[in-house]
Each structure stands twice: as structure tokens, then as C-alpha cells.
Length: 130
Image 1 (cartoon, one colour):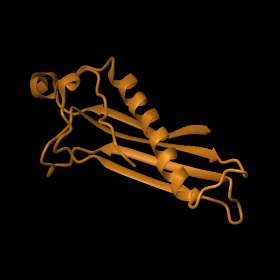
Image 2 (image 1 turned 180 degrees about the horizontal axis):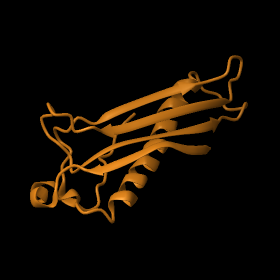
Image 3 (image 1 turned 45 degrees about the horizontal axis):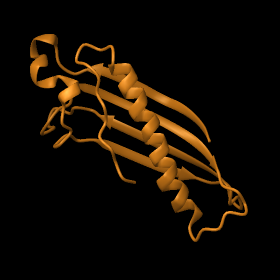
């Protein structure tokens, strides 16, 4: 797998005075609008190489029911290659599910690393099922 981040944007949502309810290490994502977009691409007549793109964001829109400590928008893409001898009914779906899970782990790690030294503390994304 070859992986590349195409967007990494992270900002503190609230000021220090309002930080009490936004302390990231204890934050619960329940009720937060977590945007997850994933796409998969494949060249015509190619059954082994796939491009998976994943974007995860919390934009903290004005009308959001619950806001997160950080506003973030992170996108990553990866090239996945299956062996030609690999047998599976739906190779594309297999790569979409497993590729997205691998890319999500990279996004979780990136967000955790960026926020580890930020004023509201380390934010760890919840687990997802693709």
C-alpha cells in the first residue's frame, strides 16, 4: 500500500476560557456530525490496482447539535494492489472496506499526533465500521 495525505487541517474550536467542556481527552463523539466520505477508483480492465480515498471531518457548523473541541478536515488516499491469484467474489468491495479501514487508522493517528500538543489536549477519533 502507498498512502498520501491530501489535506490536513486542524483548528481549536473554542478559546481557552470556554475549554472546560471541550477537554479533548474526555470528549465523547456521541451527537457530533462526523463527516466520512470514501471513494474507490480503478482503471478499466485492471483487477489488481485500486485507489481508495477517505475524508474525515468535523466542521462544527453553526447549526450542529454538538460541537467537537477541534474543527478538522483530513483526507488521505492509498493505492492498494491485490494479487492476481487472490479469489474473491467482489474485489472492489473488499478493497473499499479494508482499504478505508486502513486509511481511517492513519487519519486517527494523524489527528491524535497533531492535537497531542494542542491547547485542548489529545483528540482520538472513535472507531468506525466500513
